[in-house]
Length: 190
Image (cartoon, rainbow, N blue to C red; front, side, top):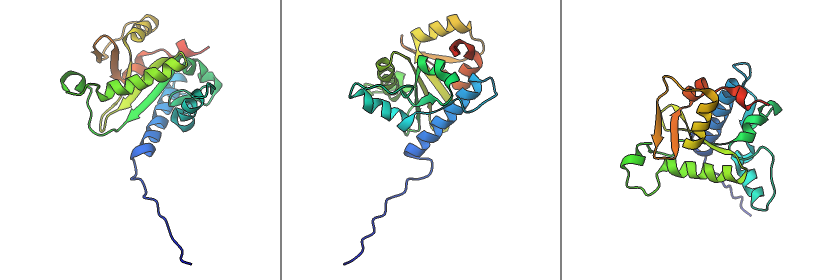
């Protein structure tokens, strides 16, 4: 009898799921520091299986508390934000550009596909869709619905020195750091 060895091809460092998981941890840490006003980096963390557990359980009409989207709270003080937002994180995905919305021949651009997935997940749990993404070699950005952005302006006041992109009548995109500097985390604490 001969012994057969099966070797799995190792993923390249910083690619695929490991890259996405690292980005989710980065976003969770930034949200934690923002939420705690610089005191803690551990209030939020990645959801089980990046929200996959929530998705699978929903198919059988079961719910999984605080597991929708890619980010959840690891401390109960973060429940207010997680009860309000379904956060989807995207990074990498080769070459894509938010300008594809203007000059691409694609029927649905990458950013639109990402936000559509985010909306569908958020709808299932009655939350606001929040897409946080980073293109290769670029800064982290946040994308929210235009109506929700108007609501946030009512909560946080006008924004100064923030460049944002308004796509059609539906999406608002800005740098994530600008959003965190503008937004008041106390609005999500309860």
